[in-house]
Structure formats: structure tokens, C-alpha cells
Image (cartoon, rainbow, N blue to C red; front, side, top):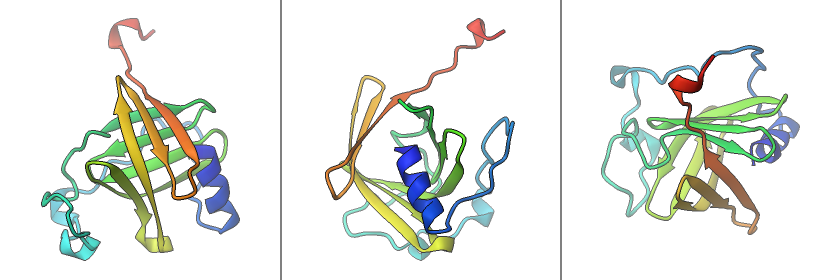
Amino acid sequence: MAHAIARMMESMGFTGQVEPRSPAPVAPPAPMGMPSWGMLGQMPGAAATSPWAGSVLEGVWEDNQGGLLIVQGGFYRLYAACRGYIEGEIRVWSDRVELSNRAENFTQTFEFALDQGRLALRDRNGQLYLYRRLVLNPSTAR
């Protein structure tokens, strides 16, 4: 999924800069610097939580092509293998997730399902994107 979205965003001129050897994603701003929930355009039926609250998608997800989806608070960063990244705000409801980048006026909604550390996203065209949760084990790191 990361590769497909990054290619689409690249063709539209919306990609971020490639940062080789970047050790970690940029942390989201502190709550004082966050926009209000109303400014984010809360959808009807959405949970009444702040946009920086954690969600079931919190963490690092890996696709089968080496791409990563990183979710931290109300933000995401989507890396495509060797293609840079896109990032923005993420909103999660019980059965769907919305990825947006307000600076580039981009929003995409997916249905999603979770099962034992696996994530399936389906876009409006029926395209399916599969991820697995990436869990790093400090005891095996060298």
C-alpha cells in the first residue's frame, strides 16, 4: 500500500523529502500546538476524543513490499521502499480509517479490519492493502 500511495502522491507532486538514514519518524507536536478537533472537521458518528489520542492502529506496520505505516497519536507517516514518504493526520473509527494531509488537500478513506497483528485496508475501489504489526524485540537487537 505504501508504494502505491507514494507513487500516486509523487505523480501529483505531494511527496515529502527523502531522508536517508532517518532513525525515527518526527514526533507529533505537543498538545499545545495541536489544532482543535473542530478544526479537523469531525465527521458525524466519530468518537469524541482528541486527535492526538492513541488508537488501535498505534505503532509500526509493515507491508509485503518493505513499506512502513507509522501511526503515532493523531498522525501517520507512510514510507514506500526507496521512494520517500507522505504524512498527515489519521482518524480512526470502528470500521474505517481516514488518512489526510491538509497542506496538500488530500484525504483517503479505507475500511479496515484487524486480526492477530495483521491489518487489512480496503479503499473505495476495492483494492486491498495488507500489513503486519512490526514489533521490535530489544533482547534480540545487536
